[in-house]
Length: 302
Figure 1 (cartoon, helix red, strand yellow):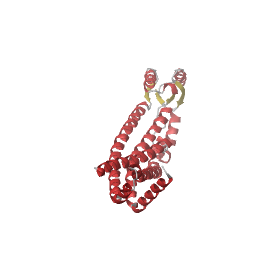
Figure 2: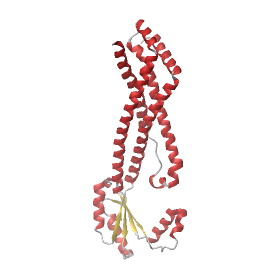
Figure 3: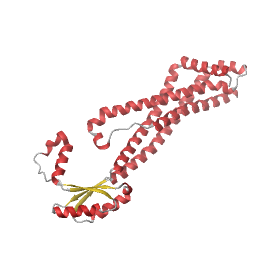
Figure 4: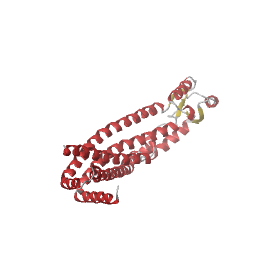
């Protein structure tokens, strides 16, 4: 392509952006909304997976002890559990220590415990599972072995919640692509209609270019470049809105209900997610412009 042709394309793109500014703003906004919804699902997936990783890295079994056990029996049982190949370490939590930790966890709301006896909480073992044994069936097998030990009255471990969370992550992934596909298809045709209107508005200039011998690619290039710019701007706006949404959730909602204390801070999508949104915006702008242009040009020639 010659420099004169590149200059012509640049001038046509600039003229189109300037003369139909609000049309391009609305088109970019439409793409931004579609990509924003897709990005919300990406954001949810990222944080669910982060939560899954944090819980999976700290799989701990709480084994509650019979109140009738002597100190010697507790020590022997702790040594026996520590010898299991799946166990990384075992921590004994006495009734007094469990009470203190529970009061500390409640903080300013610990006054609700007034009047309760300090031995209301049972003693327990906190059993941390080795990383090699943190798969669901292996943790379940260890829990079944512990249930057979005399002196243990009940077990608690988050494996069921981890499995449920993995199902939630899978559902979010499917919904993300389903809703994303519907929104992209709708946005595709909206942008296509905008391109057809732009071609109709410039039909006299296009006829002049055809009479001068301009190729079809040269005629279509300004519209494709404009669609590319719209797609990148729309994708950039969607990423910016996602960032503001994350800040809002961090500062206004989740901190007020103590969400971070249990699940950790919210995370923004990584650079690969940002690159995916920008690439999808670019592709959406280019593909919808090309599709509409070629259909319109075929009808025009006919």
